[in-house]
Image (cartoon, rainbow, N blue to C red):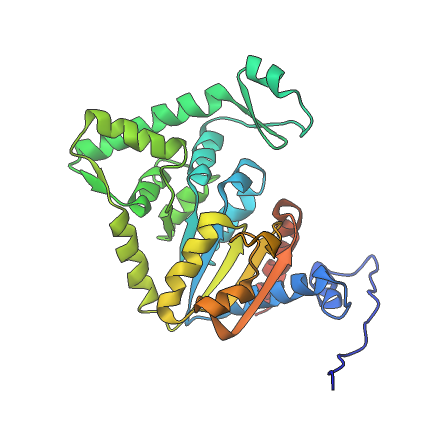
Length: 314
């Protein structure tokens, strides 16, 4: 016989309803994705509060081009996570936005005209060329030259991120990762402007090496000592997969919350629900886990606000 759940409750909100209370209402609404949203908040609250848990956050670089960079920065500033796994674009945008500005645009702008004006378009965010490639080249060559002159001839991506972070300011997520000794690993670092500048640096410094095995040693050191582990995965791709991949070596994540706009029907990693990772041993069979289908720049500020409220009470 099919087990019937509790009755679906109508959502009740008035002018005095707190954001935390709204999330509680969603948990009983039977409202499709709203239940996953409420479950995700509960998972994150328990994960961040669990002192025995090794905590990961993974995110795609594109969101750092938007105002969501401020939420990413604040989560790392709050020391909610021990390890961040991201893409090269996150480093690119963090540097570019610290030293310059991006601008509002729209998805429907004429890309031929933008190209004539030396403006890149990332969705509805406009990136002036001079505020991106040439700027990142100038900064990265300067940062790397400084390290090289101090005798550093080999760096992992985690060390590259710390190097960048110490040259940044309080608006930067890399600065707060450096300040709070949170490791930032970028498995696909060559796929972006920062990675290209590392390659350019080696053209004149042939004895300088990028050590990806150093990142593997760092992550294994975390994983093999962890009593529990959990991850907040913001978007898919390599950052999500690398997080899952390393956690298979401790029989999977104990907490997992994933936000995506991808669908699972094409077999892509980005579309794969968290529960699929159970079959690979990347998430435990008894894990607290949820997948939320939502556009993250829309929903994460509300999740962050509710988290602040719940964690303060805890």
